[in-house]
Image (cartoon, rainbow, N blue to C red):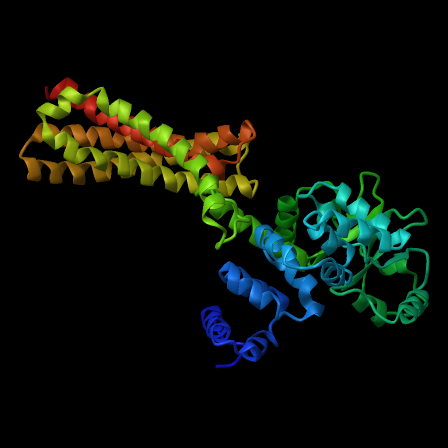
Length: 450
């Protein structure tokens, strides 16, 4: 098995065995040819004791890159294991954007020393980057941008690039600005080398390039890259002054982070939580979410308690009751997932939300009628009571209609009041489908069967 095809599970097994047997040179062999992101994933996948031992074997020259790729909680544990000099050495090679990402996690004395050791330009760039909101284009952008004036010739640009000897990574085009630094367009490297050197940059640049406002949310930047198939994009301030650029490498990280965030939020978890974090801190974080869920469960229990007499007289109600709530919950979660996705992508607005609501109600009605007939037939066959079959069929239709409406309305309302629908939507939806399901089923049974 080669390193390029070796699975994470196999690497973890090799590292665990090597550490257990104190064969540290084998640990070095495992991580020797890995990218920093792969080393970061290994560190996140190990318990604390083994993690620290592996971290001590990571070559110092890649420490900074590895720290960039691990989650915040894991990064804190790794930094805690490093001394002052090691932290400075690990972070000194990072560019401004990368350093800003981990700067606030550094011990205060280390951060102050790093600021003092920087030249004026580096210090100013870092402070400017840190001044932007964490989830904005300003934090994503790279300042290593090559900008050329529109009124110079291609030959002048070529001489300038030869003088620089190298261009920043992921440079596919040069930014074009006017005398005041205002963004005008881009000049691709292909056009630069394929056209007459006497030609002016202004004649060959592409002015039809969308720039990104420095205050734009990172999620919106990622959407822009996806919809326009961008590889890089200029970042400007509200006056149009060129500040930097964002490249696709940074956007891939944003998309991954937001995907993890959405997945973890649905369970009430923090996307930065360490898989091997100590028991007590993890339990504290989860306790809040469990407490909220307990309150909603008591609400459903209270509804059931209101129909205690009906349940005492007809045991079949208690047997069939979970079916109504479960079917409503599943139907609602399907709608909720689509709605949350649509909101995240900016596809749902006031102009189309009513149409979407009508569509989901129609789907809920059709599926409700279909499965109501199936459940009614099974209930009649099971208990030999036509009334119970009709009651559960009616309750099922009612709950699935409520689930369809709630699946659209809940995320819209949560977003309007500033709450992330992915974080709270599922709990609210479950409460609605449980309460409506139990109330409709037990209420109809009380009215018509007792």
